[in-house]
Image (cartoon, rainbow, N blue to C red; front, side, top):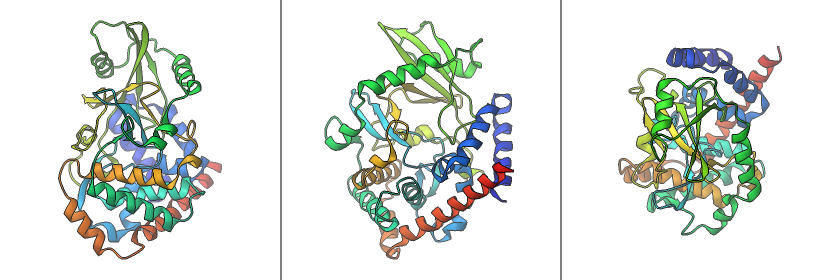
Length: 358
């Protein structure tokens, strides 16, 4: 299938999964994002990556399997507070988690950096820093706790007053729903509140790229003198498992988010096929709107890869298998795979733009 046929097939699958819950106007928004440039196209089309990456990089099919992030990219990192109130940084979206060769997460991270950060030296340099950070993560897996270390990263992700104001302005701009959301979303939001019986106002929200089309609902309540916000979003099986023969179509997002080497967000939950999380100035993604990708440097890229390694070891200790696989791979393997993936993504996006113009 070409990209046009693939998008139509994926959206038909999405409608079959969600029925009348599908947000059609958000699918139109996704189409527009895909036409903007290769980076938002990459973010919005994980299903296409899942269909094609082993054709682009067939040599990676035999790499050791892990429970992987799947839809990893530069903007799939952010901050939250853990059970002890510590500020944590790392991967914070696991919607597409599935069992797959570990190397695919490295290639996708490298591809997003090569497309999204032209200021970085070269594809070879990007790959070298990812592998360096990943090796460090294999050797010493742990969450990235900003209250304890990582002063430079902490300075970058600390929330200035203008961003706090921007967050609350965006919440204030949401339009309240005329009726409560479908029961499973309403119940999930009610369970996510710190006390029972709070008066909750409900809103629809549009966010992200890959998940556009899935319904998102926000619950806003007053608690002990200030507003609190929770978001509920439909959870679906990973697009990785849509092709036949790739395993059961089960949700793995909570399992991977709470692995051994995570300091998880205590407000993150998955119930009745709904993902719930806390929204606040400190619980957010790092996105190009507030953190231009030009700020990303080699050190942060290494930390991104370190976090990936910690995630890959979170359920089963496959360290020796991965290290053995890395030793057997030829020099430059990751850079070569990233280059092929970048060419493919750019060409796919060009075809999409051409289709959008007709």
